[in-house]
Each structure stands twice: as C-alpha cells, then as structure tokens.
Length: 185
Image (cartoon, rainbow, N blue to C red; front, side, top):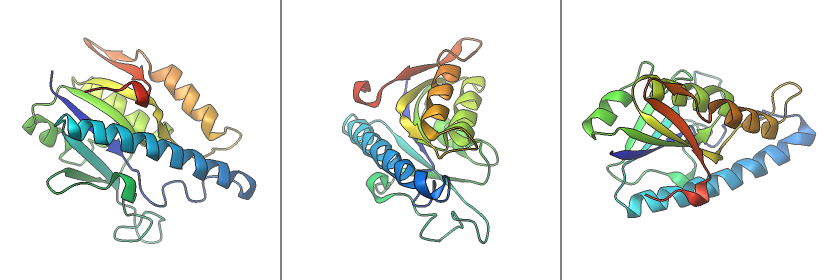
C-alpha cells in the first residue's frame, strides 16, 4: 500500500467570516491548533518520504479565496516544498475538475491520509469520493477544521463528521479515523 498525505484548503482566509464576531476568535484559534497538528504530520510524512499533496481552493473575484490574493495563499506552516504537488480546485470535491486522481495514480497511491479545512464541505466530500474511487482513507480526526454554521459550532460540526465518516465504506475501501499525534508513516 502506497500512502500519500492530502492536505485540503489550509489557506489564509479559509475561515474568515465563518463565525459571529464573538465566535470568530475561537474559530481562528482552533484553526491555528489544527494547522499545528497538520504541520507535525506533514513533517513526519516528509521524513518518511511519503508524498505530500496540497489542495488549494481557487475562489472567484471578490471571494476571500480569490486566486492570487493573500487570503488564497496556503498557510506558511504547511507550504509545499519544491517538487510537492499542489492541486487547484473550484468545488468541494478535490477530484472534480482537477488532476488529483492522475497525480495519485502517477505516485501509485492506494491510501490517503486526509486533513484540512472546511470539514462539512471539502474534507467530507473529498474523503467520501476517495473511498468511492478505490482509495483507503485515514481521516485525521483532529486534523480538520471549519467555521460555525447556523446554530452549529465548528466543534459540533467536526465531531458530527468524525462520527459520520468513521467507518464509511464503499466496497472494500473505507475511512478510518486516527488522531494526528498517532499518525506514523
């Protein structure tokens, strides 16, 4: 089994405006903690010569993630090294309209370790799609984050998706959960 680390949408403005003024600080702090855990997993993957693939959402004009804006840039903590793959997307599904699957096939990847941002959108959609495409997935249960949505806090959304995605399967392939600190390559 060839493994790759897939980090989704860890961009400067990814949770900008995703909470009320009294909640935004907690959302930002949680994201910073998640980014720190992802940075640690990324360092372990690199040390083990595991491919690191970063996904970057390209927003349209006026979007906080508008291409080439400061908000669009990947967070410096997880910035790619020369030669690492960066896949650009315009939808929640990191495979849709991108060359992600071709990149993974070129690396002979069969197992993805996934973390990143916007739990209920991009992380969820990409993890489910990966399984349906025949990849085994390890979702970093404390390695994905999001903002508040309506009456749901980011922590409720994350917990809910961990419960939903843990054990999700399509045929012989499934999603398993693992904490970032427990992820070894």
